[in-house]
Amino acid sequence: MSKDRAGLAKLWRKNLAERLNTGIPVNQWCKDNGYTKHQYYYWNRKINMSKDAAEVSFADVTGKCRTSEIMHTSPDITIRHKDLVIVIPDGFNPSSLAELLKVLREQ
Image (tube, rainbow, N blue to C red; front, side):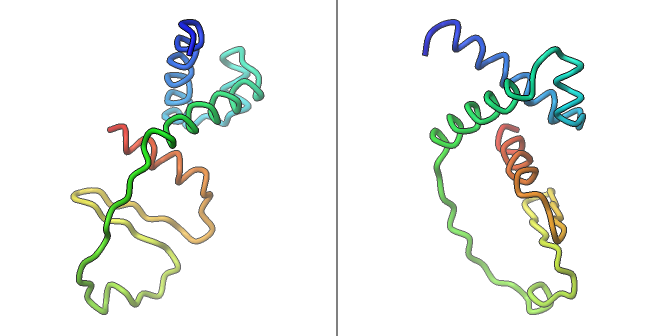
């Protein structure tokens, strides 16, 4: 990757994290910051593809569950890890979940 391209990638990593943290819709963020939606989605795809290629790993998830934890009436999914609890509601946006997990991996 050329020096200019690496600088742009670094800038866009910062831009994407900023937009995600503010929660501003993409259209509004682009308008406020002088970018087009094309630029935003191009760099979002580029940055996320390079992360995915570099971060392929698997975790063995095994353990004992109580019956009360398996049988629930809510269609929501709850993920618990240490002191973190993430509730994923029925009908969630998979892209939003993917972005959330990427941000958490960086922490």
